[in-house]
Image (cartoon, rainbow, N blue to C red; front, side):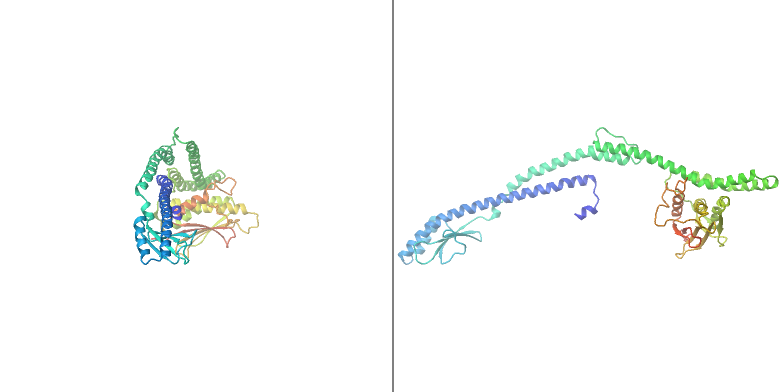
Amino acid sequence: MQWMQKKSFTLKQLVFLSWLAPALLTLFASFSVFFFLGWLDFQNNVDITSSDLSQKSKVVARRLAAEIMLEESGSIDAVSRKLIEELHISDLGIEKSAKCVLISDQCVWKNAGRLVMYRQIPHISEQRFVVLSMEMKTFLSFLNPKYLLWSALPVLLLIALGLFFQLLFLRKHIIEPVSSLVSAAVNEIEVQDSWPIELKQIGLNLSESFKAREQAVFTMLAKGVIHDIKTFLHSLLIAVDLINESEGDKRNTRLEKLYEACKISLPKMKRIIELTLDGSQEIPIRPVEANLINTIKGAVDANIAYARERGVVIATSESSSSIILAHDPIQLERALANLIKNGIEAVFLADGKGRKENKVLVEITDSPSGDLEITVEDSGLGFDLEKKSSFIPVKSKKAHGAGLGLYITEKIITGHHGRLCALHSSLLGGAKLSVSLPKGRVV
């Protein structure tokens, strides 16, 4: 039954199959009984014919025994013809041996639609047998189609009625409730009193599950917004603290820098909030032809103040001043800023644990596959590469983390048809996160 395991069926088809199997079994049983009754009739006819031949063979054997002892020429043939007519047998003869096993000086042999009886002729010195044969009906002649029709009709009627009432019952009590449960993915579930107890319980459990899922989705969205705007807010708060600590011209200079930072960061924060709360489950990617170097620089600048506060150096490799690539600058900067911030926190947590330097390195190179590869390496403790939980939402190794950083980052990278890989940094000894972006749309 491997074909049934591979093929998918609707509920109606499964109900039909559930009836088809016993129906075929019932029909098989009907035919078996039909053939068995025909076989019984056939055997009964054979027994009656055998008994009749046995009685007639006794008469024939005695008559022919007398003729043999009288030894009158031609008398045996004449008596044989007369006995055939009197006893209504098909044929009669005398043979010296029997073709079947004798039981009480006689035996029966079936041959080509005939029943042949061998009986030993008594009272003569030489062993001889009279052979009588009679035409008999074949087995198939005892199979009357009328009997099959009458035996099959009640079965077929029962199957038809069973299917009709079962479909009515299942449509009301199973198919319609299950359809309601399926539609509950987008609508409220209304549990009906006519539903079976098990389906009522499933409906109530699904209602509670959907409510919990909606709450979890809203919580995740809120945490996602907070997670991504914290990077921008943190740099702005640090700038405000520096202004509070300064006076005169230095204060004015820092106020100007704060204004420039606000002019850049606040629109980004606004768009992140709008895109996250627009009700879509996927992060929308709106690519434009933009300078990828500027996008990376924006992600680095967003973390400069945060890195300085924690005593971490962000280093970038020298590369081309312009790489024009179709991408979403806001979302890709958001993703890279997450990677850099995670690197800073990893370095800060590893400080004092035998690390030689506190550093995060951001590089852009051509990968062997021909893609653009952006790597963020740090001197932290690195990933446990055997565990695959790094990109799972609501799972963080930080005390107050929501576990959304790498998950959101991966979705943004995937939205750009790229790949995000977690590796070990042989250069700095910590983690290495590699972002591969296809170059097919580079201008």
